[in-house]
Length: 439
Image (cartoon, rainbow, N blue to C red; front, side, top):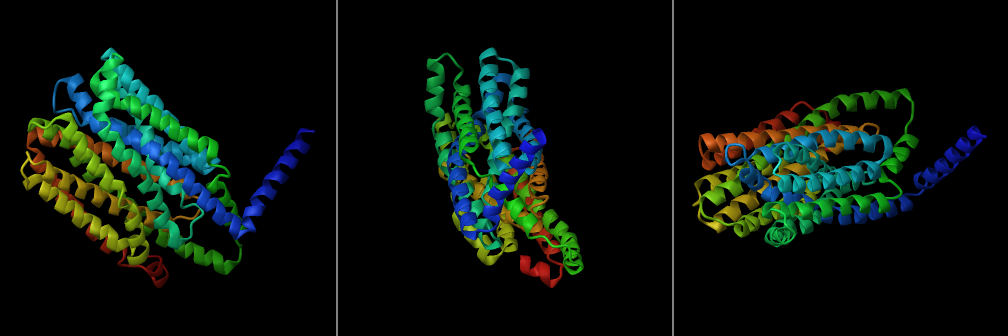
């Protein structure tokens, strides 16, 4: 009886998937529906991400009483996001985007609640553990950009990434600008001021997870895998072609990963120490929120234009543009007057824009290079490297500023970003015509 029920369930599932395999119209309808759900979840996810980023270093400075370790919060939640990226990627590969992304956002919300609790109890150990768990929200916010690409063709991929990212802007810009409001609310309920934004982060992440859990049906990744499986053939000629493409795709995976990892490192290092730098030059929490708000807005708001450019003029061109933009940002942050809000806003906006160019172009390169059979798992593994690079950037940023200056940190970051250019040239150097068209 059990075998019969299992067989009937399998038949029903196969028929459901077959209806999408046989209908390009249904595929496009699901593609559009998926983008809508991702947009809604990313609005909440962006608020959860930005609120914590804005005051994380300041909270650590307040609890630890020293500047030299203020990069630790960024390091911890990016380290936590590394583990979460691997978990979310593997979960998504096995059970679909809905399960992986919802679990990641809900974990991030639990971590944010833990940060508030640690501030109440003044527990450094609990703060560290909570920031690790809070990092799951950051990893999931980043991985959600892949969900819209599952049913997109190559000409739609960068656009789909961009739609997911630009929707993050609404929450990401609102989050830092609610720092004062949430700080005042926290005081009213007996919570330390700097823990207030994490109340917003907890609510935002949990709402993002619930939106995905309830509405991301049918799961786009499961449908995309079924379509890919149905289109496979075992002919010798295609197997030989796929084998050749696989060796070339490894080069594409490396190039895409390097672009994203390096831009994440530079962006995180400079962004982490900017609030501390501003505090040393007399800027208050409101001004910090304004600068970080512009920075995060520049990280996500230009995405629609960036996606169009990546699809139209190429992945390599936009990756190179990322390196140049980050260099200009580093020079401006280092050389500009520290008491000028306009200069700081401009430098941090360029920092966010350079990251935007790098993330979207690098993501498109990575998706082009991976078949659906390993795509989610590969994406999760690459996002682990992205998170680890952010963690390293957060730790080193505090050490560099403590041992030298914010200007030194900014210049080093700008110069380091130029390494993207030889990586892009190398990745395009020894490839055949088939790979040339993929770029």
